[in-house]
Length: 151
Ligand code: NI
Image (cartoon, rainbow, N blue to C red; front, side, top):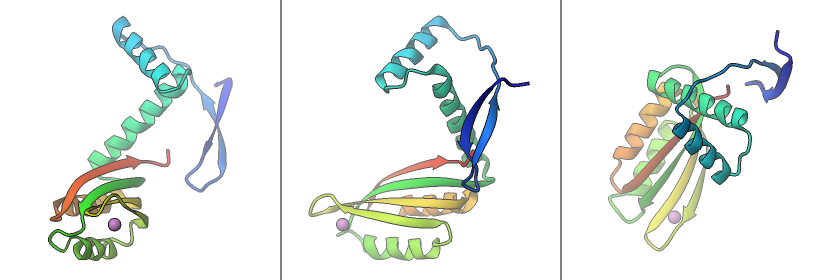
């Protein structure tokens, strides 16, 4: 029976109290030293919280690769708005995948380049199709998908 608890937000938006389970892990000393250095650089001082984040991130990444389940995500793109009708094909593509797109933020970087952050929610397979097509559009210079999950 767990004796420690943590609050997390459920997929429905409510707070859920979850029991914590302790387990021990064996790792090479050098790996732990690197992990702790990374912790202090990133401003985190709690190994348990860091391991929880790493586990959630790993599971989210697996869902992405296994193509199942509903996930949240963002994709950040940088594109040249003068090249090859990049703007119109990008707009057309986003309308086609509007079911998984929550919103888009557009920033004009300089006279040539634009940055967009597209926030996504939906079936991972549909997101994968969107991101694959997106990265193949002419004029898109960078595509950075980040997939998270409501775990
Ligand atoms: Ni722009």
